[in-house]
Image (cartoon, rainbow, N blue to C red; front, side, top):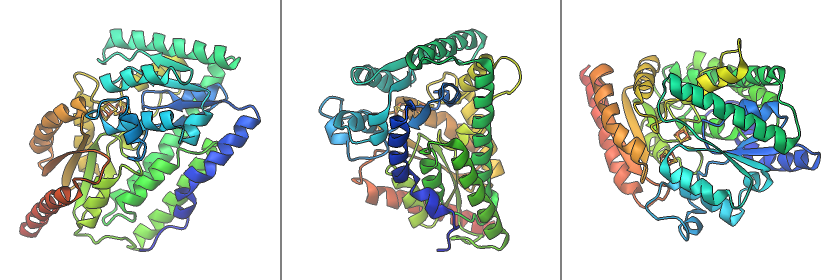
Length: 386
Ligand code: SF4
Ligand code: SF4
């Protein structure tokens, strides 16, 4: 398969940057670990610290986590806790402060345990997106700002926040343009490679360096697309993957879709398209942050109409032939929401919909393969009959 030149540089970022984070710490930089899209990276940047994403995407530390946590809990929570308790994630190891939010029940109770290992600041996230909630959440932004100012002995001025907002908005612009190359048919990059980039680019000490790398990759991919270079053909079924966060290590379903003959052209999840909407750059920066972050359409919000509209929009923009809604076992919010999403997708976009509930293990791989093959065959049949 032909790959863009910059791809290999980005695919090794995670390993290379563990060392860079260590060196930055030795020079006095602070490191802040986050677990969720509701954590405002701008606040960390404005404090002069390095934000690192600590969401566990590997099955390896799950058995250690299960010594404390229930086995039927979401694998993302078990993996995140497992890395912490086994001290096997260098990014957790170097973190000076963790930012956490009250999203789902499993995560917020797990944070109580993490708080015994590291300094942790818990943001109380409202679970509705109205004016009263926005006013409360703005107060939570103020509390976070004060905590970081106290812990790191810095002043987070409005100007510093505005600069950080502008930088993170540029990162969002870059990520959106990268993902949008998959609007070409066929897409010049596989879903697995796209996931590798989305996962690894976050592990950079210098956000500008990551933006430059992703922009370079996007330019190469556009050129490939113009020349028709692709791992797929124009008739390959185009799949939109919605649902829970995925990363390298929790990529089983993405891999299976592509091994079975599909092309994952869009990820609706937190590390991908849910992330790209910018923060307003005028007015009060704290209010702008609160407004943008509260609007994130995670299933912990009730109601969560924003996610239904986002998936509908993405199906149209990426010309998806089908939606696969991935939900982790033990994730009640995404599992239950799948019913409403299916009804919405079938009623608006009129494309086939498949819900897959699984975990990080390989125990159900063969069973999933059969279901995915049947789903893709249904799409292929529909395409043939026009
Ligand atoms: S799915 Fe929800 S709880 Fe999970 S990372 Fe995204 S915003 Fe946070
Ligand atoms: S996938 Fe679901 S259960 Fe797991 S952390 Fe996210 S919202 Fe919570």
